[in-house]
Amino acid sequence: MGWTKFTAYADPADVRRLTQLDLSRLTRWHSCLNQSDMIAAASSQYSVEHNRGREDRTQATSSSPITEMLGRDSSRIATGNILDYREIVDSDGSRYGRATVRVGKSIQGATDWWMGEIREVRVKLGSKQEYANLRRRAEIVFFGRWDRSDDMRPDPGYGCPFILANESNLNLIRAGAARDYAATDDAE
Image 1: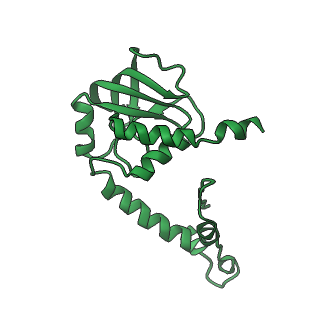
Image 2: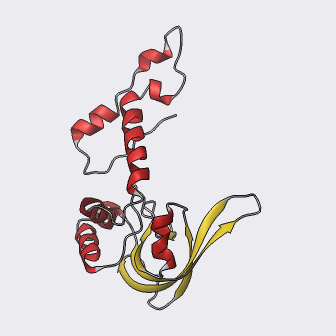
Image 3: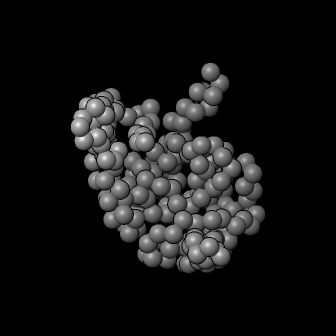
């Protein structure tokens, strides 16, 4: 199984390129061994972006277009100050982070995150430099999932490190949120 994810803003040429399937692999004497045999362009692009994402996570900031895109694509956005951060190891050996957060401002749709409220948030483990912001009690931006669930998280994805809640980042996020067409899509 393989899949490709697009937003409404994707370039049509990229959509055509990344959805090309090599179905001849199904009928050859030696069939395909993995998904990259059938979706070579998408698989190749994923490898490039995945490796670039690992490198980018060590940077201190996210790019302006991605920060704006997060504002557009996230269903819920709020700021919060990190009060405590610790790493957890479950009984099955899996590791994750847990942050205690004092909620700041709701920027979009986070109606159940009240200013001043204390919350516990699960954190996906990443680079050590990135988690220095959590340990320094920084004010960061939390994003709701794109699937519109109730989960809020500080790791925005797209190979981005945590986004500090400074005025330039918040302006980009607000600009992106102003272009969020999900509310009109749901109404139709």
